[in-house]
Amino acid sequence: MSGNNFIDYVKFCSRSGHGGPGAVHFRREKHVPKGGPDGGNGGRGGHVILKGNSQLWTLLHLKYRKHVIAENGMPGGSMKSTGADGKDEILEVPLGTVAKDSETGEILCEITEHDQEVILSPGGRGGLGNENFKNSVNQTPRYAQPGEEGETRWVILELKLLADVGLVGFPNAGKSTLLSSVSAAKPEIADYPFTTLTPNLGVVGYRNDQSFVMADIPGIIEGAAEGKGLGLRFLRHIERNSMLLFLVPVDAEDLNKEYEILVDELKRYNPELLDKQRLIALSKTDMLDEELMKEMEQTLSFDVPYVFISSVTGQGIQTLKDKIWQTLNSDR
Ligand SMILES: Nc1nc2c(ncn2[C@@H]2O[C@H](COP(=O)(O)OP(=O)(O)OP(=O)(O)O)[C@@H](O)[C@H]2O)c(=O)[nH]1
Ligand SMILES: [Mg+2]
Image 1 (cartoon, rainbow, N blue to C red):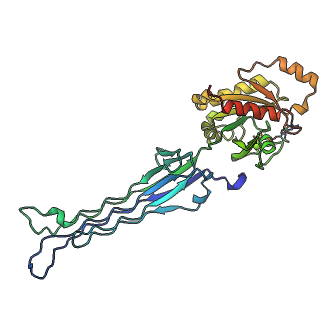
Image 2 (cartoon, helix red, strand yellow):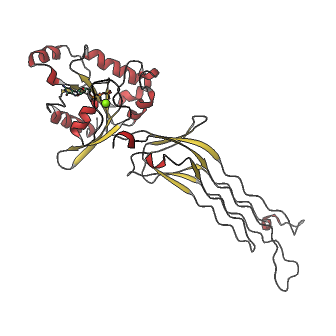
Image 3 (cartoon, rainbow, N blue to C red):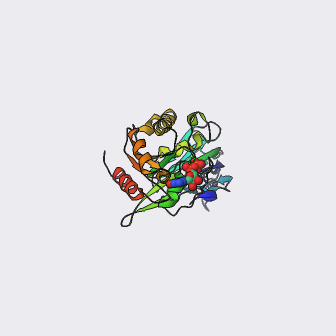
């Protein structure tokens, strides 16, 4: 689920159907020379609907749909028959999809549950047929309403990942390496910053048949909240994670400071992120010998629990998984 197949942003034109026009018609029966009005109502235009589907993980299937157009309603008929409603256009989307108006940026809706349906563009109402306009003054109305027009708007869909654990760290901290060592995901790994350009998800197996989902996002640097580095576009992905795992490499110059910068960026982006449970993994422990490790540990002043790990040797990985599991399953 990594690399190019991950599409978390699409833009398309959503157009609901016009309502069908009402009919102008008069009854025709053999022995009734002047039948009354019997023109039926037009059908409703089709809606464009978003529907949550918990089996979907990306917006890839919508990548090439530039226009989503629902059917128009059918016109009303004689004998008060109502025209058929236009067929709705239903777009299935992963949970965590947010729809915005592309011009105003206004949030239109958020899909968070399986089978949740939200009308993105409502179809136009059908027009009333002339049968509705009969009154004591006018017994033979030659008027029927036209159908209401459908709506057209450009819409952006954005996906916020619904992973259980979000990895937070500077570029090169070893986030992708950790994800690849605990899951089947194959993110790109390299010794230069910003290797990861789009988020990667991996399912981490835990003991017997249990699992949780971990998300590796691009590295965060000082100033990210103001748009530095890859900036905001990726911070939004961790808003939904139920816990955050901070990765700080043991060879960092100042581990406390690195953690503080990360926390500060998250806080500036969205203070609610700090309500989430946090855990620190001190990564790349294979790079320090025991002596240096002990020395370094004396200097730590973290406000949340930490674990030493090495994705290369596997040291501490099981302990880390246990801690994550406990955290995810604690009621705080
Ligand atoms: N010795 C050692 N090197 C590691 C370990 N984990 C990662 N590395 C190395 O650190 C470098 C960066 O690793 P990545 O996993 O790409 O780092 P990242 O945090 O995903 O980086 P960005 O995607 O740029 O944000 C690579 O050269 C890895 O091989 C580890 O446990 N031990
Ligand atoms: Mg990476």
